[in-house]
Length: 261
Image (cartoon, rainbow, N blue to C red; front, side, top):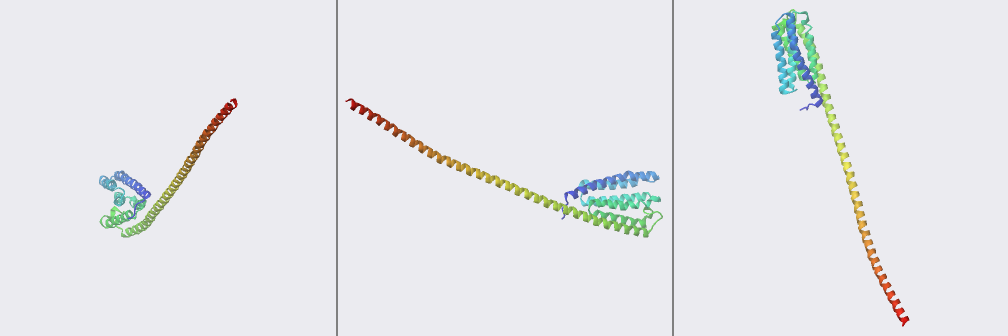
């Protein structure tokens, strides 16, 4: 199962919004054609409106999935068929067939071959069926199987190119998504490695600082013991000196006493 890339999903969402908006725009166009020609306009406009409603409901319910794309494709071709029917007997009826090819090209915006195939199949079915059942609805002057075949060949050529283009664009989107994911993973791995390196440096620094503090504390402790020993020795020497001084004074006193005697 192919996972739709984010960019491709956004493109298809935009395509659905635009094409469904175009389906709703066809509604006043259909009514305007009927009113301008003085023919029945309510039924054609109702058909166009139903196609727009079906596409909108599918989009609301199923999102921008394959079913919505194919309903939009059928709706686009159905609207053009209604326009060709409304222009029956008018010189522009044959020109309206160019809109079939334009509408089919619009479906390429989905970057999906399925709506293109469904749209082409809908046009082919419409032309073949009405050529025998109601030829005036598609061509002025009655049935013309040769013209149907000519249009079918052109339609198949366009559909083939559009299918190939849609396939290529989808592949490009998928490749871009894969490369982007790989780049993001590489960037995340690099960021993780950088963070781990920074953490290791901080940990080493903390260990060095702790070692220095330990050495300093040990040195201070040893020096403190030496200083304390020196102080004790100094006090002992001071005591000895005081004792010797006292003895000296006592000897001097006794000498003075002896001299006096």
